[in-house]
Image (cartoon, rainbow, N blue to C red; front, side, top):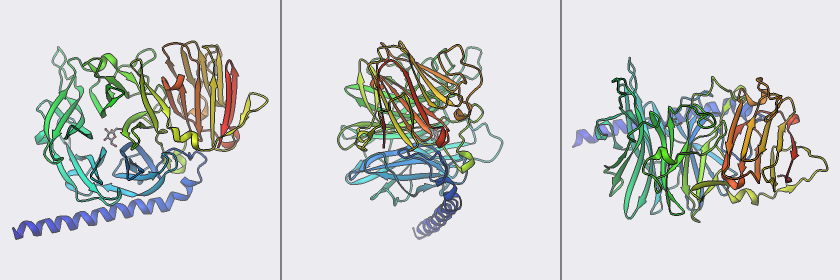
Length: 504
Ligand code: FRU
């Protein structure tokens, strides 16, 4: 007894020293390049960003004692990622965020290579955070079947900042035989007195000729006490729909059962699946085969790994990462030169109509005190950092919006059921649309989306270096990063519909 207590104390001491060293390193880096980052013209006003370095997935989204908490995959030590931390920020309105010290770092053997994505559960005045501890063993491994260990862990917090000791809930010994070492991103919820945890997974699969053809899927574990978890359900489609699913989320929305997930390995089609990895939802209440109802959340260049949560007033809000993994070869973010990269999307309110999920900016956006900037001509210079454009009564007629300059800008082209975003020189939807891409797109080219009827209304929010386009009340959404200097920030509207421009 005495011996095990002693070992525990030594381990705890080691962990604390590691935590402190990690936090010190993050803070030193924040101090060293914080000024350069803060002075970058591409910093946004209403979007969650890394204080310095790199951000990816939103984690642990919740409202706790009235305050919104957002955690995120954070790499303060490298602008190109690598992880190591859960960053933390809080807000009262989902738009103005205050940044705090990171809450999790890689400080125990079970999470030594990464404190990966996860979620929050609020119960009895406490916050429970669930995440994946990633371990990559040094050596010559494939890191699919060997060399990788994925642990699911939990910490408890009374205030959202100070975390309890880490507790391992599940490890490799607990997963089914056919699951590879890729199993992560726990999203936990409570229903009818039981707890459920959904995990994204890569299952071993084989093609007819015997070669490997892995399959993405999800596993759901159940628990009576949040500590002991048993496999409850395994959803691996018969026919592979991607080789790995990341960041799953399962929730009810207006009576429908929604599975959100990020499949990797889908072949690009003519207009769908244009990014390297996809992110979308399936309506399990309509078909048990997720592929059948799969719809991409966002048709833009920059969207991945979203997570949802319920607000205290009952809204289902989603925040995504305005980025996609492994894109650096295809396009770049011009903020890298100033020591930071990526941001999260605007929080979006979800609802369902006719079997389709609609996404709208949270209502808090409209309480910011926008000023109507109606101009005599159709060109407006937004020298502030944020502009909101609303167009109504388009009726499927031709509409062209330019954000930026003619030779360096983003073109949004609307016609019939189509919406197109293009960084190609010469614009979109015209014979002149060339092969050259505009500087401000960092290499991004063109994306297309379609609504079920005609495009009738448009909401476009440009917050410095991010543009989000909501078509027909959020039936179709596009997110893209854009890198325009202040003096290049023009907005030109030409075509059908009644438009209004607002700034704040
Ligand atoms: C998705 C993801 C998750 C993982 C995290 C690591 O972008 O790969 O599956 O938990 O990022 O940062």
